Length: 190
Image 1: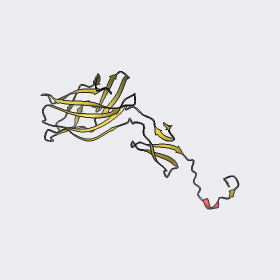
Image 2: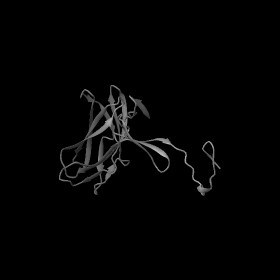
Image 3: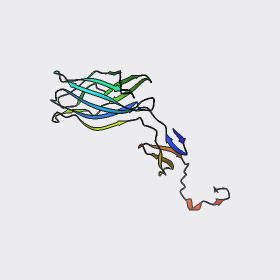
Image 4: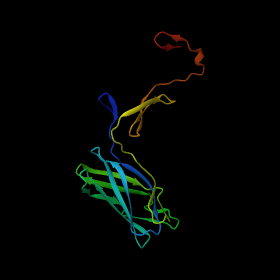
């Protein structure tokens, strides 16, 4: 959805519902390893969900999560499952679908998200938690920077927040012998 403000087109805010996380937990690491995941809340604010991974003696990792509101106060977070485990090759074994269901229970109402951790690994990495990629589907309002038509006749808008959206589709027709078309008045061809 696009709205106008002061003559400029803005992309409307979209809250985050899916986060893709591709990390490596360091095998043999001790203590807690953590990461902050950016997301957009339902009140159009950019926020961070912190996820902690603590190694257990049984080759599992206990999870903990915390979010803070816009006043930097902790917000209750519920999530499932509470632990993850890896096989002997460092591949995620449990949960089998690689997904966490996360609900952030703040004053604006509960916001449920899915954190997809595939492919997540547990390989030796000098005790360091490394992240190959983080993606989330929310975005903040921003200004239209560029427009262009692609090869299929779609008008594409590029926004300063990195969002790219299809704005309009021009009807396009192909003719096997377009040089045989006869122009008539009113933009009509036979």
